[in-house]
Amino acid sequence: MWKKTQETVKFLKEKGFVDIDYAIILGTGLGNFTDVMDIHIRIPYKEIPNFPVSTVVGHHGELVYGSIGDKKIMAMRGRFHYYEGWSIQEATFPVRVMKYLDIDTLIVSNASGGVNSAFKTGDIMLITDHINMMPEHPLRGANDERFGPRFVDMHEAYDKQMIAHMNTIADELGVGLQQGIYLALQGPTFETPAEYGMVRRLGADAVGMSTVPEVIVAKHMGMKCFGVSVITDLGVEGQVEEVSHEEVQKVAKIAERTVGKLVKRFIETY
Image (cartoon, rainbow, N blue to C red; front, side):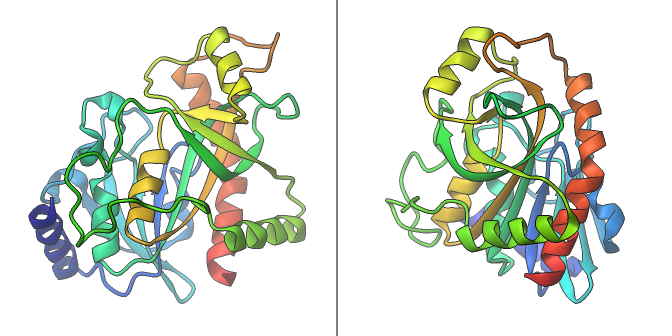
């Protein structure tokens, strides 16, 4: 892992990925965020040494380097999921690369099913904490101290100052936000009514198939993390309805412009 990370970092630095302020994983709900960036470099994942290739519809599969104002951004247009068949270490490999590109702050986005009865489809939720229910852990196995410690403190997985700053921005822009706990399951099936009920009873507000492994790896390396989730369907008791990936993408697309505006202002002012 160390050798592969350094090889990929060397490749990207030679391509011009330097002096980066923020890394962003553009999941469903923020996939076209690069439209508000001044783009300097685009590289398809398939051309990057050791990178997996995204196979999910709606995930573009390229690494983008650009800027918003005076801030330099590296954006992943599409992430890698455990359910695609990658190992959990492969799926989180780009986060290792981010840290060794000297990036200290990671922003993640996703689509999720809301299980909080106060939520409605299309809501934007700031992730305040998570519950890891993935069947594999990205830090399992021998620990390489060059990446981080054996046992990682997770008491503040999602940075409280960043959450507070985003709430201030939302107030200024007149955008209503939800806040809540995100629970990660393996997927790729959407949850059954009984599974939605389990998620509620475990104390989560939303459920999805990503993000948590990435944040764990980022915290392993001492990075600050901020997460936002678009509620694309509901698993509220008595309201569980049929859902499809196409419907998730449709709802996320509607919220995408607002999420993009919030994150752009966040980067400009934080």
